[in-house]
Amino acid sequence: MSSQLKRIAVLTTGGDCPGLNAAIRAVVRTAIHHGLEVTGVLHGYDGLIAGDFISLKNENVSNILQRGGTILKTARSDKFKSEDGMNQAAEQLKMQNIDALVVIGGDGSFRGAQKFSDAHGISVMGIPKTIDNDIYGTDNSIGFDTAVNTVVQAVDKIRDTAASHDRLFFVEVMGRDSGMIAMMSGIAVGAEAILIPETETRIEQLVKILERGWKRKKTSMIVLVAEGDEAGGAYKIAGEVKKRFSQFETRVSVLGHMQRGGSPTCADRVLASRLGVAAVEGLLEGRRNEMAGLIDNKVIFTSLKEVTTRKKTMDNTLVRIASVLSQ
Ligand code: F6P
Image (cartoon, rainbow, N blue to C red):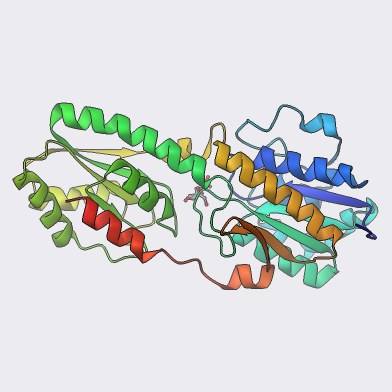
């Protein structure tokens, strides 16, 4: 591979998730393999503006593949949304002779990256990460597989106590705008109902499903609620249901940030490794302002413009499967 690139920078931005360290390691080792120098940017775009940089060598990314979180730290940056912030960030990159930036982030971060690149001509390559799995241009984003496995483990445990006490549980999982975590983990735990922002939630309909379960002598029931469901969070929905269906004792469990931590699964480690390699080699091939994703098990590059303007949709067959199997 011949290229003008000499030095690249890498950062993690937005909410953390398992697999970020695996992606950082892959970026650093691939870059060094191809003779590039690598700068790590701490604290996401805020660190880019502040010049919070470290030099990364192979040894700096040893023994991090299996760890949750991010050695580079992360942040959601308001400063980077301003013209001033972007100017300062561009100045910092110029001072360090950095030719390209690898952004391990979500669609909000890519929107910023695209704007930054348009304004300052800096080459950007995206790697998709978020437990929510709502980024267009990849089947799975880094972190999703680990998060759903965390949810499955937690809800299996909740099922034990629900069955022992004959209880109905409402379990809230993350997903501000997306029901991917709820849907996937809901199928995996045999949830009686899965409430997601992509489909309309009707309390009367939900009550009918629960009554059906009660009539056929189910001893416990689980309703998975995505936090972004338009009918409200788990507490609100549980309250509404209770007014109409009181056959079971009801409890609510909000899983929260435990979904964002932990050691990445094999699938997330391999995904992060493949995308980290692809991102650097994509830059070396001359690709600019694209995101490396995995579609049908193949690395596919999609322009950041497309990634940030198109919406990933819920697979309706999953909705149907969940409904058929929950009877
Ligand atoms: O975007 C990922 C996500 O985990 C969402 O599902 C959730 O709503 C949000 O981050 C929580 O963000 P914070 O860590 O800022 O509370």
